[in-house]
Image (tube, rainbow, N blue to C red; front, side):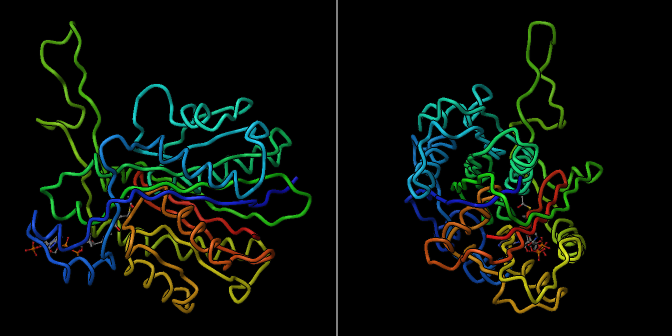
Length: 327
Ligand code: ACO
Protein backbone atom coordinates (compact mmCIF):
# COMPACT_ATOMS: atom_id res chain seq x y z
CA UNK A 1 0.00 0.00 0.00
CA UNK A 2 1.11 3.56 -0.68
CA UNK A 3 -0.23 6.84 0.71
CA UNK A 4 -1.50 10.08 -0.76
CA UNK A 5 -2.71 13.42 0.53
CA UNK A 6 -6.46 13.80 0.15
CA UNK A 7 -7.03 17.24 1.66
CA UNK A 8 -5.71 19.94 3.96
CA UNK A 9 -7.11 22.50 6.41
CA UNK A 10 -5.78 25.22 8.67
CA UNK A 11 -6.85 27.58 11.41
CA UNK A 12 -5.13 30.77 12.52
CA UNK A 13 -6.32 32.87 15.47
CA UNK A 14 -7.77 36.20 14.37
CA UNK A 15 -5.60 38.32 16.69
CA UNK A 16 -2.67 39.78 14.73
CA UNK A 17 0.46 40.89 16.60
CA UNK A 18 2.83 42.90 14.40
CA UNK A 19 6.45 43.85 14.96
CA UNK A 20 5.54 47.41 15.95
CA UNK A 21 3.42 46.08 18.80
CA UNK A 22 6.40 44.00 20.03
CA UNK A 23 8.70 47.02 19.79
CA UNK A 24 6.44 48.69 22.38
CA UNK A 25 6.88 45.87 24.92
CA UNK A 26 10.54 44.83 24.38
CA UNK A 27 13.63 46.61 23.07
CA UNK A 28 13.32 45.61 19.41
CA UNK A 29 12.17 47.05 16.07
CA UNK A 30 10.35 46.02 12.92
CA UNK A 31 13.63 46.56 11.06
CA UNK A 32 15.61 44.15 13.32
CA UNK A 33 12.97 41.42 13.30
CA UNK A 34 12.11 41.53 9.60
CA UNK A 35 15.72 41.79 8.40
CA UNK A 36 16.97 38.92 10.63
CA UNK A 37 13.99 36.61 10.29
CA UNK A 38 11.55 37.75 7.56
CA UNK A 39 8.75 37.81 10.15
CA UNK A 40 6.44 40.85 10.10
CA UNK A 41 3.49 39.63 12.12
CA UNK A 42 2.16 36.53 13.87
CA UNK A 43 -1.19 35.33 15.19
CA UNK A 44 -1.77 34.91 18.92
CA UNK A 45 -4.71 33.17 20.60
CA UNK A 46 -7.22 35.08 22.70
CA UNK A 47 -8.61 33.80 26.01
CA UNK A 48 -10.59 30.61 25.50
CA UNK A 49 -8.72 29.46 22.38
CA UNK A 50 -6.37 26.51 22.80
CA UNK A 51 -4.33 23.87 21.00
CA UNK A 52 -7.20 21.33 20.81
CA UNK A 53 -9.83 23.80 19.63
CA UNK A 54 -7.56 25.13 16.85
CA UNK A 55 -6.65 21.55 15.90
CA UNK A 56 -10.33 20.60 15.65
CA UNK A 57 -11.10 23.65 13.50
CA UNK A 58 -8.26 22.84 11.08
CA UNK A 59 -9.37 19.18 11.02
CA UNK A 60 -12.99 20.08 10.28
CA UNK A 61 -11.91 22.08 7.24
CA UNK A 62 -9.77 19.18 5.98
CA UNK A 63 -12.63 16.69 6.50
CA UNK A 64 -15.12 18.95 4.70
CA UNK A 65 -12.76 19.44 1.80
CA UNK A 66 -12.07 15.68 1.58
CA UNK A 67 -15.80 14.93 1.65
CA UNK A 68 -15.25 11.99 4.00
CA UNK A 69 -17.30 10.82 6.96
CA UNK A 70 -15.40 11.47 10.24
CA UNK A 71 -16.36 7.92 11.24
CA UNK A 72 -14.05 6.63 8.47
CA UNK A 73 -10.94 8.10 10.15
CA UNK A 74 -8.85 5.25 11.61
CA UNK A 75 -6.15 7.27 13.33
CA UNK A 76 -5.73 10.84 14.60
CA UNK A 77 -2.18 12.01 15.24
CA UNK A 78 -1.61 15.44 16.75
CA UNK A 79 1.93 16.79 16.69
CA UNK A 80 2.30 19.39 19.41
CA UNK A 81 4.72 20.62 22.05
CA UNK A 82 2.11 22.89 23.61
CA UNK A 83 -0.91 20.73 24.55
CA UNK A 84 -3.69 22.29 26.63
CA UNK A 85 -3.44 19.50 29.22
CA UNK A 86 -1.26 16.68 30.48
CA UNK A 87 -4.46 14.62 30.28
CA UNK A 88 -6.36 13.88 28.05
CA UNK A 89 -4.24 14.05 24.94
CA UNK A 90 -5.09 16.59 22.24
CA UNK A 91 -6.01 13.93 19.66
CA UNK A 92 -8.76 12.55 21.92
CA UNK A 93 -10.15 16.06 22.37
CA UNK A 94 -10.18 16.51 18.58
CA UNK A 95 -11.89 13.13 18.19
CA UNK A 96 -14.71 14.16 20.52
CA UNK A 97 -15.13 17.49 18.74
CA UNK A 98 -15.29 16.08 15.19
CA UNK A 99 -17.10 12.80 15.91
CA UNK A 100 -14.36 10.48 14.63
CA UNK A 101 -15.67 7.71 16.89
CA UNK A 102 -13.67 4.89 15.29
CA UNK A 103 -10.27 6.55 15.44
CA UNK A 104 -7.28 5.65 17.61
CA UNK A 105 -5.92 8.93 18.96
CA UNK A 106 -2.58 10.05 20.29
CA UNK A 107 -0.17 12.98 20.38
CA UNK A 108 3.41 13.10 19.26
CA UNK A 109 6.04 15.53 20.53
CA UNK A 110 8.99 16.41 18.30
CA UNK A 111 8.94 20.22 18.32
CA UNK A 112 9.08 21.71 14.81
CA UNK A 113 9.69 18.27 13.24
CA UNK A 114 6.44 16.97 14.77
CA UNK A 115 4.34 17.07 11.59
CA UNK A 116 7.01 15.21 9.57
CA UNK A 117 7.36 12.52 12.25
CA UNK A 118 3.55 12.17 12.38
CA UNK A 119 3.38 11.92 8.59
CA UNK A 120 5.96 9.12 8.67
CA UNK A 121 4.04 7.36 11.45
CA UNK A 122 0.88 7.52 9.33
CA UNK A 123 2.80 6.13 6.36
CA UNK A 124 4.12 3.19 8.42
CA UNK A 125 0.56 2.25 9.51
CA UNK A 126 -0.80 2.61 5.98
CA UNK A 127 2.12 0.77 4.36
CA UNK A 128 1.61 -2.11 6.81
CA UNK A 129 -2.07 -2.28 5.88
CA UNK A 130 -3.18 -1.46 9.43
CA UNK A 131 -5.03 1.80 8.75
CA UNK A 132 -6.52 3.37 5.61
CA UNK A 133 -7.42 6.93 6.58
CA UNK A 134 -5.33 9.08 8.90
CA UNK A 135 -5.89 12.64 10.12
CA UNK A 136 -2.58 14.36 10.90
CA UNK A 137 -2.54 17.70 12.70
CA UNK A 138 0.12 20.14 13.88
CA UNK A 139 -1.25 22.58 16.47
CA UNK A 140 0.59 24.98 18.76
CA UNK A 141 -0.11 27.70 21.29
CA UNK A 142 3.50 28.82 21.62
CA UNK A 143 2.50 32.21 23.02
CA UNK A 144 1.94 30.60 26.44
CA UNK A 145 5.49 29.17 26.45
CA UNK A 146 7.23 32.45 25.66
CA UNK A 147 8.84 34.92 28.01
CA UNK A 148 7.35 38.13 26.61
CA UNK A 149 10.23 40.05 28.21
CA UNK A 150 12.84 38.09 26.20
CA UNK A 151 13.29 39.81 22.86
CA UNK A 152 15.47 37.00 21.53
CA UNK A 153 12.56 34.52 21.49
CA UNK A 154 9.19 36.31 21.79
CA UNK A 155 9.53 37.88 18.34
CA UNK A 156 9.97 34.53 16.55
CA UNK A 157 6.90 32.43 17.25
CA UNK A 158 3.16 32.38 16.52
CA UNK A 159 0.07 30.27 17.23
CA UNK A 160 -1.91 28.20 14.73
CA UNK A 161 -2.94 24.78 13.47
CA UNK A 162 -2.73 22.86 10.21
CA UNK A 163 -4.23 19.49 9.26
CA UNK A 164 -4.01 16.94 6.46
CA UNK A 165 -5.94 13.79 5.62
CA UNK A 166 -3.90 10.99 4.04
CA UNK A 167 -5.28 7.74 2.68
CA UNK A 168 -4.07 4.40 1.38
CA UNK A 169 -3.69 4.20 -2.38
CA UNK A 170 -2.16 1.76 -4.87
CA UNK A 171 0.50 3.98 -6.41
CA UNK A 172 2.50 6.69 -4.69
CA UNK A 173 5.93 8.01 -3.85
CA UNK A 174 7.28 8.39 -0.31
CA UNK A 175 10.94 8.58 0.69
CA UNK A 176 12.22 9.87 4.00
CA UNK A 177 15.18 10.55 6.17
CA UNK A 178 14.48 11.20 9.85
CA UNK A 179 16.98 11.93 12.59
CA UNK A 180 17.41 12.98 16.21
CA UNK A 181 20.38 14.10 18.29
CA UNK A 182 19.60 14.21 22.00
CA UNK A 183 23.15 15.26 22.83
CA UNK A 184 22.25 18.68 21.48
CA UNK A 185 19.01 18.90 23.50
CA UNK A 186 20.06 22.13 25.23
CA UNK A 187 19.90 24.20 22.03
CA UNK A 188 16.12 24.57 22.44
CA UNK A 189 14.39 24.00 25.75
CA UNK A 190 11.29 24.76 27.80
CA UNK A 191 11.18 22.99 31.17
CA UNK A 192 7.95 21.62 32.61
CA UNK A 193 6.56 21.52 36.15
CA UNK A 194 8.61 20.86 39.27
CA UNK A 195 8.37 17.73 41.38
CA UNK A 196 6.26 18.70 44.35
CA UNK A 197 4.84 16.05 46.69
CA UNK A 198 4.67 15.32 50.42
CA UNK A 199 7.96 13.37 50.22
CA UNK A 200 10.13 16.23 48.97
CA UNK A 201 10.88 19.14 51.26
CA UNK A 202 11.62 21.59 48.43
CA UNK A 203 10.32 21.79 44.88
CA UNK A 204 12.99 20.37 42.61
CA UNK A 205 13.34 21.78 39.14
CA UNK A 206 14.97 19.39 36.67
CA UNK A 207 16.32 22.40 34.85
CA UNK A 208 17.79 24.00 37.99
CA UNK A 209 15.71 27.12 37.29
CA UNK A 210 14.25 29.08 40.17
CA UNK A 211 11.01 30.04 38.48
CA UNK A 212 8.65 28.71 35.83
CA UNK A 213 10.57 28.21 32.64
CA UNK A 214 9.99 29.51 29.10
CA UNK A 215 11.34 28.74 25.64
CA UNK A 216 15.09 29.23 25.54
CA UNK A 217 17.09 28.97 22.39
CA UNK A 218 20.69 29.12 21.28
CA UNK A 219 19.69 30.85 18.04
CA UNK A 220 22.98 30.63 16.21
CA UNK A 221 23.46 26.95 17.13
CA UNK A 222 20.02 26.15 15.72
CA UNK A 223 20.73 28.17 12.59
CA UNK A 224 24.04 26.35 11.96
CA UNK A 225 22.52 22.92 12.66
CA UNK A 226 19.74 23.46 10.11
CA UNK A 227 21.95 24.82 7.34
CA UNK A 228 24.49 22.01 7.88
CA UNK A 229 21.99 19.14 8.13
CA UNK A 230 18.93 19.83 5.99
CA UNK A 231 20.41 20.33 2.48
CA UNK A 232 22.18 16.93 2.76
CA UNK A 233 18.98 15.15 3.80
CA UNK A 234 17.14 16.72 0.86
CA UNK A 235 19.80 15.56 -1.60
CA UNK A 236 19.79 12.03 -0.12
CA UNK A 237 16.00 11.73 -0.22
CA UNK A 238 15.89 12.85 -3.85
CA UNK A 239 18.56 10.26 -4.73
CA UNK A 240 16.80 7.50 -2.77
CA UNK A 241 13.63 8.21 -4.75
CA UNK A 242 15.53 7.98 -8.04
CA UNK A 243 14.61 11.58 -8.87
CA UNK A 244 16.54 14.70 -9.75
CA UNK A 245 16.17 18.10 -8.11
CA UNK A 246 14.83 19.49 -11.40
CA UNK A 247 11.77 17.27 -10.86
CA UNK A 248 11.02 18.82 -7.45
CA UNK A 249 8.17 21.32 -7.76
CA UNK A 250 8.38 22.78 -4.25
CA UNK A 251 10.50 22.61 -1.13
CA UNK A 252 8.00 23.09 1.71
CA UNK A 253 10.24 23.69 4.69
CA UNK A 254 9.43 24.45 8.31
CA UNK A 255 8.83 28.20 8.46
CA UNK A 256 11.47 29.14 11.04
CA UNK A 257 13.36 31.93 9.42
CA UNK A 258 13.64 33.38 5.90
CA UNK A 259 17.45 33.47 6.10
CA UNK A 260 17.55 29.75 6.93
CA UNK A 261 15.41 28.96 3.87
CA UNK A 262 17.58 31.19 1.67
CA UNK A 263 20.74 29.43 2.92
CA UNK A 264 19.24 25.99 2.21
CA UNK A 265 18.20 27.11 -1.31
CA UNK A 266 21.69 28.46 -1.95
CA UNK A 267 23.38 25.25 -0.78
CA UNK A 268 21.11 23.19 -3.03
CA UNK A 269 21.64 25.65 -5.91
CA UNK A 270 17.87 25.83 -6.32
CA UNK A 271 15.86 29.04 -6.99
CA UNK A 272 14.27 30.58 -3.91
CA UNK A 273 10.95 30.63 -5.84
CA UNK A 274 10.74 26.87 -5.24
CA UNK A 275 10.65 27.57 -1.46
CA UNK A 276 7.16 28.90 -0.65
CA UNK A 277 6.99 31.02 2.52
CA UNK A 278 4.34 32.55 4.75
CA UNK A 279 6.42 33.20 7.87
CA UNK A 280 6.07 36.93 7.25
CA UNK A 281 2.38 36.60 8.23
CA UNK A 282 2.43 33.80 10.81
CA UNK A 283 5.95 33.58 12.29
CA UNK A 284 7.29 30.22 13.41
CA UNK A 285 4.31 28.03 14.36
CA UNK A 286 6.49 24.95 15.04
CA UNK A 287 4.71 21.68 14.16
CA UNK A 288 1.85 23.62 12.52
CA UNK A 289 3.97 25.53 9.99
CA UNK A 290 4.24 22.86 7.26
CA UNK A 291 0.53 21.87 7.19
CA UNK A 292 -0.55 25.53 7.35
CA UNK A 293 1.67 26.33 4.37
CA UNK A 294 0.47 23.26 2.45
CA UNK A 295 -3.12 24.31 3.07
CA UNK A 296 -2.55 27.88 1.89
CA UNK A 297 -0.89 26.53 -1.29
CA UNK A 298 -3.66 23.98 -1.79
CA UNK A 299 -6.34 26.67 -1.52
CA UNK A 300 -4.56 28.69 -4.21
CA UNK A 301 -4.55 25.56 -6.45
CA UNK A 302 -0.75 25.49 -6.44
CA UNK A 303 -0.59 21.76 -5.72
CA UNK A 304 -1.38 19.42 -8.59
CA UNK A 305 -1.62 15.64 -8.66
CA UNK A 306 1.79 14.22 -9.57
CA UNK A 307 3.80 17.18 -8.22
CA UNK A 308 6.90 15.98 -6.39
CA UNK A 309 7.30 17.93 -3.18
CA UNK A 310 9.96 17.93 -0.48
CA UNK A 311 8.66 18.46 3.06
CA UNK A 312 11.30 19.18 5.69
CA UNK A 313 11.09 19.96 9.39
CA UNK A 314 13.77 20.65 12.01
CA UNK A 315 13.89 21.85 15.56
CA UNK A 316 14.13 21.06 19.25
CA UNK A 317 15.50 17.73 20.43
CA UNK A 318 17.35 18.21 18.16
CA UNK A 319 15.11 16.54 15.59
CA UNK A 320 14.82 16.67 11.82
CA UNK A 321 12.99 14.96 9.00
CA UNK A 322 12.85 15.29 5.23
CA UNK A 323 10.24 13.50 3.13
CA UNK A 324 9.63 13.41 -0.61
CA UNK A 325 5.98 12.94 -1.56
CA UNK A 326 3.99 12.95 -4.75
CA UNK A 327 0.88 15.09 -4.34
N1 ACO B 1 15.59 42.86 18.64
C1 ACO B 1 16.73 43.55 18.70
N2 ACO B 1 17.90 42.99 19.05
C2 ACO B 1 17.90 41.69 19.35
C3 ACO B 1 16.74 40.90 19.31
C4 ACO B 1 15.54 41.53 18.95
N3 ACO B 1 14.37 40.89 18.87
N4 ACO B 1 17.06 39.63 19.65
C5 ACO B 1 18.38 39.62 19.90
N5 ACO B 1 18.89 40.87 19.74
C6 ACO B 1 20.25 41.32 19.91
C7 ACO B 1 21.05 40.47 20.85
O1 ACO B 1 20.84 40.87 22.18
C8 ACO B 1 22.44 40.74 20.39
O2 ACO B 1 22.86 41.97 20.93
P1 ACO B 1 24.38 42.19 21.39
O3 ACO B 1 25.20 42.02 20.14
O4 ACO B 1 24.37 43.57 21.94
O5 ACO B 1 24.67 41.11 22.39
C9 ACO B 1 22.30 40.92 18.89
O6 ACO B 1 20.93 41.22 18.65
C10 ACO B 1 22.70 39.72 18.09
O7 ACO B 1 22.06 38.57 18.69
P2 ACO B 1 22.17 37.18 18.04
O8 ACO B 1 21.43 36.18 18.85
O9 ACO B 1 23.63 36.90 17.75
O10 ACO B 1 21.42 37.44 16.66
P3 ACO B 1 21.41 36.58 15.37
O11 ACO B 1 21.96 37.33 14.26
O12 ACO B 1 21.96 35.20 15.61
O13 ACO B 1 19.85 36.45 15.10
C11 ACO B 1 18.15 34.79 15.35
C12 ACO B 1 19.03 35.80 16.06
C13 ACO B 1 17.24 35.55 14.41
C14 ACO B 1 17.32 34.07 16.40
C15 ACO B 1 19.04 33.81 14.57
O14 ACO B 1 20.04 33.27 15.39
C16 ACO B 1 18.27 32.70 13.99
O15 ACO B 1 17.52 32.88 13.06
N6 ACO B 1 18.47 31.48 14.51
C17 ACO B 1 17.67 30.35 14.11
C18 ACO B 1 16.65 30.22 15.15
C19 ACO B 1 15.41 29.62 14.66
O16 ACO B 1 15.00 29.80 13.52
N7 ACO B 1 14.83 28.88 15.54
C20 ACO B 1 13.68 28.20 15.26
C21 ACO B 1 14.02 26.88 14.63
S1 ACO B 1 13.73 25.59 15.66
C22 ACO B 1 12.16 25.73 15.98
O17 ACO B 1 11.44 26.14 15.12
C23 ACO B 1 11.67 25.42 17.33
